[in-house]
Image (cartoon, rainbow, N blue to C red; front, top):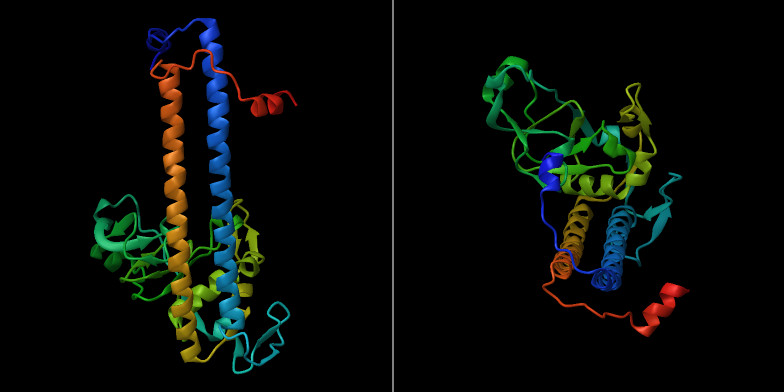
Length: 295
């Protein structure tokens, strides 16, 4: 749009007194809506905190509060259930990476093989990706095709400044050089939950590279000692936590839906007020609101 085009747009031009009435009305109403949205946002933050706390407690202390506990011998972990053990991550999993095939070869791209990068790591289970590869890319480059059920993590990227993304691929997939795919002797969903549950600990071994991006120190990461429940307990924890998360996710969607409707109402209210579709001439602030405004 040019300045001339912008200057040619016609606007509603009520008299000055009505402009002031519209401004007072919208200031008051949008402040009410914004306060409601802020409360809903606070609820979302509490749900996120509850989610993290539930996962962390389940994967480090188990589900039975009455079970006997013992000292794990790991400072960050403290006590664990008596029938659990601890092992370093390097003895519980192996890591494999990926690469980026030449972007100058269009025959490598747009196939049916997922190529997962950090920008895809927004869900717990991944069956597709934004970019995909062809079988020719696999043959020519030797990029690894990871079987389904691998635990995928981000090891490089600015997202590591605040979040440690973890997911599981549900179909064979490749990854780029900013990712690692873990094959584990544990229940794969339990390991994924475990890594989410210890996110603050993982982020503590993230450093800044020479190029300014964030990098996970995998040498230190692989030496983290983790709690290892018996296999049946791992399965039970996964099932219970999944049920909790399903409920929390439903609550989150409900809150987000309300926030969306409030935002839509806010926009419609502004549009209707400034185009004269609602008559707010002579609008006065309620006494309580006016006192607050002058306080």
